[in-house]
Amino acid sequence: MTSDYYFHYVEDRGTTRFQCRWDRHPKTDAPRSHFHPPPGANGVEPSPLDDHHLDVLFSVLDWVAERVERFHDEPNRTD
Image (cartoon, rainbow, N blue to C red):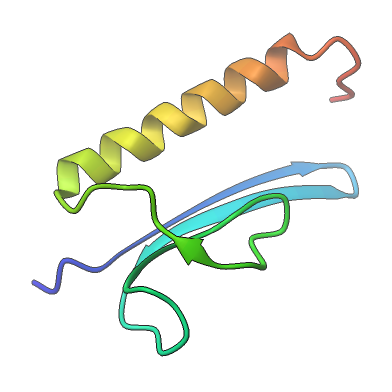
């Protein structure tokens, strides 16, 4: 087991795409644990997640749940 991970969150709204990614793997130009922020997952920054696999999983699930709540609370959403 390498303790590497890759979580990719994607929303497609017609022609608009919102995505981000949490990664842990060797990368020459970023920390081993890093985050590709929304809206395009293009950049890279140090990961805000802890090292333990359950902390990683539950942190990502909490983030997704909060994102879904915000989306459903938006008054002008189009879906």
